[in-house]
Figure 1 (cartoon, rainbow, N blue to C red):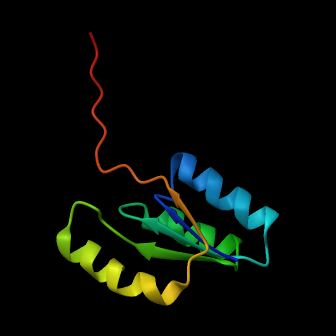
Figure 2: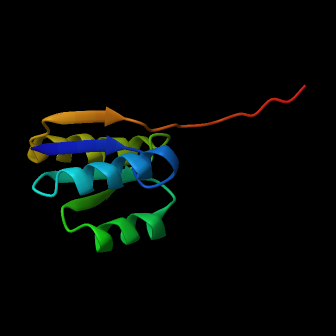
Figure 3: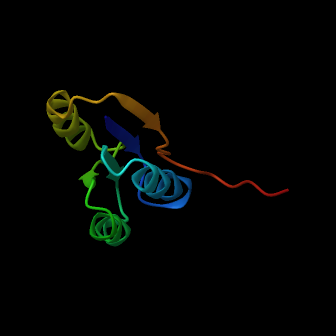
Length: 91
């Protein structure tokens, strides 16, 4: 099984990635990251079945490069967890 998790290196995405990597060590798990390269590298070191892919959804070139590569990954499961921006409004 091949899984792709967008936004998989931090927050909830990190929890999803590491949980699935533990439950399914035979699966290949690709996960995207934007600015959390250190966290992505730590996941790859901890879980040999995980592979980080840099992706910035706010950058057209980054998205184009990713979409050209995605066909090669043969994804069975997609978990879309990416957030392009988060605004906190307080009253």
